[in-house]
Length: 157
Image (cartoon, rainbow, N blue to C red):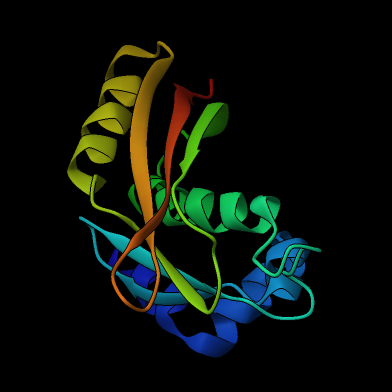
């Protein structure tokens, strides 16, 4: 897992990862702020490629950042597992509380729960679902949006 964190924390390698694997996130300018086995924080800025006609960040860009804060944690716990575990978003629920302008930070603090679900999928060979929360806050600390993203994990082979 530490090898994954060393790779993903490097700003150049993270941007290369986005460019090659998630080009829309690269273009939107999503950045990794912090990541650990327990939590991840990604940030998204209101800019030309993320704006909507109403003077705020387009909801799809917000959803992309929210998903990334949860997906990075899952990827960390899946890194170099043999046999591999597949991961798939199966449900997304969202609430929007305030106009998203400026810099929005999305935080997911459920790394332990993700690790437990992934281990269960590995041990049983069955599909395991887990709903995780990503909360987005603006620069003043006000919650802008909250996402409930349900991941499915299943051992390959």
